[in-house]
Image (tube, rainbow, N blue to C red; front, side, top):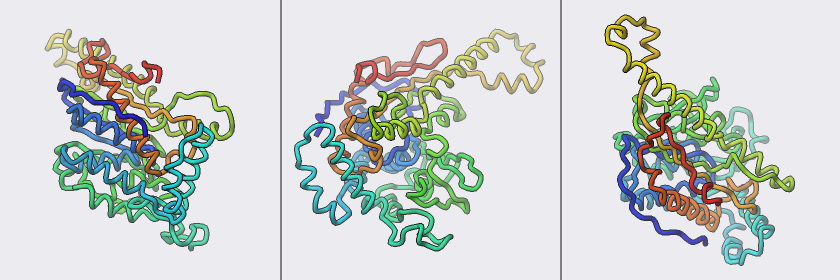
Amino acid sequence: MAHRQTAHHAKPPEFERVALLLQGGGALGSYQAGVYQALADADLHPNCVAGISIGGINAALIAGNAPSERVAALRAFWEQVTSPSFSIQSLTAPFFDSLPFKGDDFHRWLNQSRAFTTALGGAPGFFKPRPIPPYLAPPGSAEAESFYDVSPLKETLERLVDFERINSRETRFCVGAVNVRTGNFAYFDSETHTIRPEHVMASGALPPGFPAAKVDGEYYWDGGLVSNTPLQWVLNTRPRLDTLAFQVDLWSARGEFPRDLVEQELRQKDIRFSSRTRAATDQFTRMQRMRRALGKLVKALPEEALAELDDDVKELISEADEKVYNIVHLIYRAKRYEGSSKDYEFSRATMEEHWTAGYNDVVRTLRFPKVLERTAAAEGVATFDMTEREGE
């Protein structure tokens, strides 16, 4: 097991909003749980959590529990879904997990074996294989819609998440999904919706593995089909607020050139689901620079000139603001031995590796005080990726 570093308490950040933004990525989501634990240990508690797919589930576990119980809820979920579920896996997991690792090739084979058993037996408390394969089921039946039944996830959410707490808006909560009929992206926000388990399940309903989730008469698929991160939604939400955002990505847009077809498949998956959050951050930075410049221009105009402006110009002026944003990138960087099945490799040993990696990345990031200080940059936006800076 990887060594976990020690988190130190940070000074309270001077921001109106502390946002935790969680990308989709299946079994990799335990990295996000480690990130949250390190933030909590440093006494940094988000007042806004938003997620896509597995990020939405983690977000619900956070927003749907009291601060003192959140890590325990995350731990309960991740320990349950990484318990052996398939008979062969139950028999072999203790043997596999006790073996000493003998290089990347052996580790890759081990992880692929674990992923294979998950594909056959599912993940307890999350999903289970349907008794009838979808290709043999009659069209329109539940069995024809997906390979797995996700009713165990609904039971798990109802057990581990207090939806009344989410809907009390103590912590703003949001998940993203895609309307199957229209193809439009939808956000289910505790400020505008009464959040229920099906909203969370809709965000992670990735076909053909999982069935579409029905919410208020409409069917939804995994939000990652359109955008795998809630970053832009949170940054553009009105009213705008001074924001410290921890953007947690499970897929790295940057990576090494693949050496073979196995690594090529993994690299394609990383690029497809990374959502290019740095590009989104760069775009937001340009827009915020223009908003701040517009704000300075408006301040320089006499009041009588402002009163004579037409409605179109007034609407443009309404975009002006002087808010500041610190965006902290926390990106899981997969090891070479992790293949393209890393997002459904639900073994306990790998879960612990991911959890510890997320925890340690936060500890290293918080060593840099500027991360928590309001930026003085002219554009009002500062971005940080300290693990990259350290060459890790």
